[in-house]
Length: 291
Ligand code: URA
Image 1 (cartoon, protein in one colour):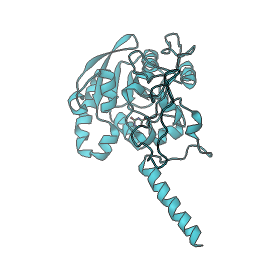
Image 2 (cartoon, protein in one colour):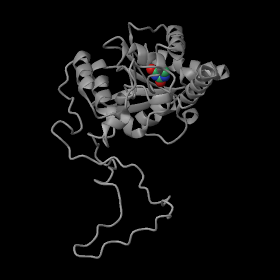
Image 3 (cartoon, rainbow, N blue to C red):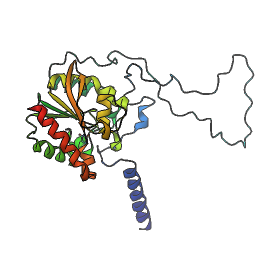
């Protein structure tokens, strides 16, 4: 009995630790043994030009010269060195066929884009996500919303903005007479980052060729970036969202130039309702532009 109680408490502490680390959903019945993957990082098969790659082998002690005397044995009571253990390295693999930046220029529609993304191994987020989240809404639309990254609900459902932030987004859109029939909703990355962290610039860049083709297929009149991560990635801006938001820009993407603006993310508005007036002003500007 006491043992059961001890195990129950230990399991509770373990679960609390997982939750604190951002592991807040069970995605499969069986646990994944990540160590069985060996030294290959998820997404390591693909490197964009300019992306740093890890050295082929982890740095270790220098190899002995042929014929050199063997290194003296350490005394039996020597403590194991604490600083010489190399950091875990993921070796860069020689690119295999199909590992180059994806050429999606010939992709004719969103169904084909989805199939290409399902086969794409160039973004590490895919390894820990349950589902691909490509878009929801209209296939071609005057308004294209580009958020940051799928969250838990989105990952489970395989669609962007279906959780609480998405419900607020739908209300914001309704306030300017827009809905899923005339709006295309997506994100700068197509898979949920573990623990809902912000996607890294590399992850966004890995997805970028697909996003560019998506914009070309949707043919929006206006692109609305939601939140700082999306705005920074799309507009290559260093400023924070409060400075970026509410200004019209020409976004050169997918071979065309589109009018674009950034506004506050609905998840931020849920936490900070006092900021809604700024988002409202931005939405009115979008509405005027769409007329
Ligand atoms: N937040 C985002 O940026 N995108 C989603 O799809 C959901 C929440």
